[in-house]
Length: 501
Image (cartoon, rainbow, N blue to C red):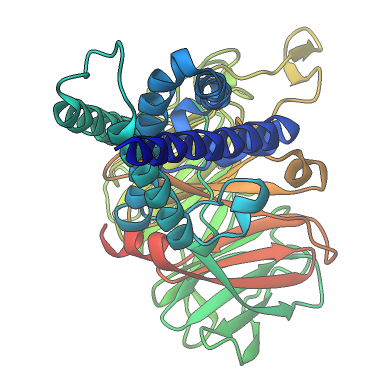
């Protein structure tokens, strides 16, 4: 009997020592590389929202439990706390492996070399060690002295329930009430190919069928196309005699079987077939516009500055309507001057039949139907609710200019069937500084139907030139760096998100 008791005591002491070594090593590793630890928690599918205080709590608990395990009088409490904490860690890993949409990076130190499956097995072993030690230990004051089995069951249940509640709440907060914590998933896109466009004046004109089209800001009548197999480039020349029209800013748009040539400064808008690349129609009664997006073969949405006091305003042009031009004066919301503060990007998504407008200098975008009736006003996950700009009035107030460089928030977007890809210029919480210091940017993805944030895609700086613009289709992400086209394919989580829209 005495030998049995001694063996039990030895097992308890060895288990306590192992836990002390584990927790001290883990906490010291986290402290020495605390920023990376916070970043890892920020990318966790369970703890993203709580990364700030949770990082300190985990370290504090590991140190506190280690101290409790060192002294005989507090060893019992330390074992129970070790059991509870390790059950939480184990459930956390189990949820990541079986219920999370992605698997984040592992812990630091030696444990980082383990796979998540190995880490799960490692944690289960330590849970069993703590469980056996609790059973072997002779209790002197714990409330579970006579009811250890009940205590173990209750402790395990509470630990599991805590992690599950954290997971459910964190996912909800992450997608619908995000306080600017991004989620990066390594398997969201996969590099496919890159193509040299030869010149840095190309921009995305659109896509139709199996081809991507590029306009040229320097040579407006010269275009390029590439097939979706990324093998065949084709040079295109638009057949158009401008008859001396004083064009200043010509833009080409592709929509279905038609192409459109427009310049809002003239203003003029023409249409032709992509089968012949010849202009065969001019739309009459076109108002001036600073940006435009094609809705269908006879209508487009535009923005100009003919609103009150020269403010920006959204309008619809419809060649088939008796009243060709209709404005929506209350769609854009003024904050400062109605001009610079409402500046932004305009697109029409053919799949969802929605007009989308995203402000440049605040975390806000809106969706409207094809008649410019507001559907929703939503926000990006950053916290810039008001445009951070300074406007100076010149020549007695007749002219206005930026008095200081503005803080760009949303630098453009691309939409596909209720999936919005927003180019962000603002660094989020718990993000690595290297991405931003080296000229990187981020594309945040939103589900317009659910009105939720999905994930983020880091765009690293390229030796091929600065990041100019991008476009998405149902399967691929296209980016232009200088004169280089970069092509990526959607993978796993992102593909599922698009497919389920």
